[in-house]
Length: 151
Image (cartoon, rainbow, N blue to C red):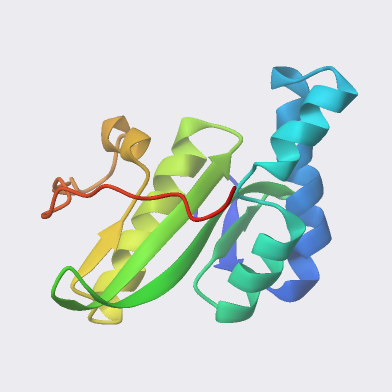
């Protein structure tokens, strides 16, 4: 797009680089190796999650002018969710800065519109980002709860 960042559909070949990028971001939050390992086990970018998302073709990666990852989002389609035929669920977004994060959100939004999806679900923290054209964020229609099915 601009600032030397290019965006493309994340490929399975990007898995190690995405994982390394996300893990490096955690080092500032969890300098202790053991704490960081536990955080990775509970993360949304675990390797098995990346394998799943990258096979689907709905995730994007941003790369800087040196071809290094500077952001990504993990997305997957949901069919027949809340009475909508097609929904893109963006599970996780990570970026070097707010500009790149905003561009990734914009890509997910435009992709969903271009593919005639009825809605896209984002993590709530994206609503305060700045966009060239405003995105009208909505609350989830149906109040939800969830039940843990594992011990």
